[in-house]
Length: 147
Image (cartoon, rainbow, N blue to C red; front, side):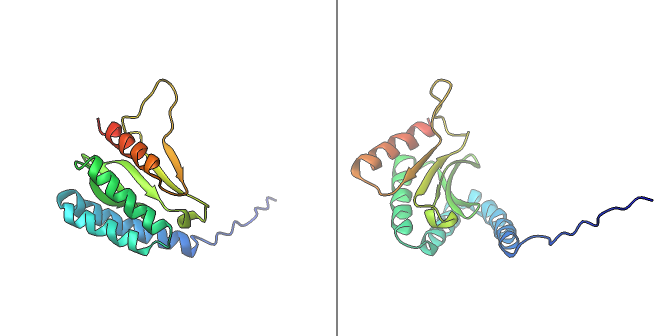
């Protein structure tokens, strides 16, 4: 006689369900944002406004730097984060530290970003503050990413 242990599954957690709902809303918003820059800008501004300090200020400054460095990038949200796309593909994004309870925010670049440098290069940068030197480096990275 075979005895099988019954598998119990609690299903998705409340946080997982909330993330799925948010992603579904984002997919609809992405469609709008790809056609209408103002809609994407509005979504990004709303996400930035939800962030606690100092993440909000850093995100707002990054948004300004990215928009000035590569105006061809379209703002939108991506997994609850401000992101910037070219031809519908995410090039870079800002993950605020509070999102995953980390001590720093992250500026990340996707594989769409043209940052290749030999056989190994960084694709994410930890940010604890934005200095003039950091801002110049970020502007250069964003310009290179879309080149």
